[in-house]
Image (cartoon, rainbow, N blue to C red):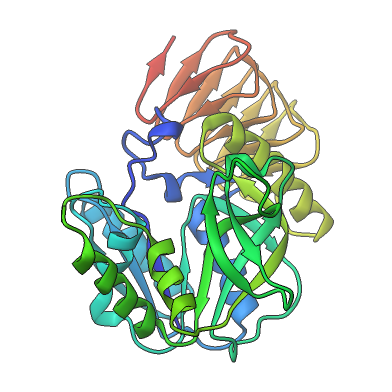
Length: 338
């Protein structure tokens, strides 16, 4: 089994958090979006994963420090990391083809900008599986069309007329991913304008057309982390899930002085919290200092310092200093507001 992770996007909707840190590496509920998604997928697979292929963007954003983080993450899951690049943003189909040399056998393709809770068992004998979630407004999503056997026969982006209410969430399984590669290469070959974007859906529709059975699976929860407010909502829900699952959320390597923590919260290692009220639904990253502050429903990344603050529904990046009383703030990495 392999896992292919296209993650070359700029994450523009999550700015300023993503000016320096790529979106998949933003921490939500104590772990990066990428690490949590990989963990859940690997747990679902329940068989050894031989390789994780990370498809990253240009070196100006995805530098050696990012590559080192990805290598360590793969090692954590006891699998081999492979790094390849998508230098131009030519769509999800092009991104997957950047891993074409490694597209053989069973593989997952996951787009790491969401968090999920899987339900049901995974069947590796199926040709193709697309994970979906029932949504209230299908017009806002790409959805699947099912036949009488509940097999996927079409993929429709932002349907103006009702097709189904099962939205595609960006997680796919292929029993023979070389067949997807062939269909994507055919789609690319048929394009007159080679600089035009093309998408993974074109390859999947090609598979349907050549007789592959494409099945729909469902998740119990799908949390979009695409912008700041959605990431904050996802943080709160993931903290609630972790609390219910008895996941340890508050590190023992912390210093607490006259501070109240209102559950659920994530408190990282080497944190210093003094004269403050933290929570509910707050994540505080490693090596962060908070003094004389009240923080609720917010995400604080690592190595930051917050004083005299009263904030809610906010997001503060890595290596930040904030001294103020704004109700709602959003500041990216290496910022100082005093």
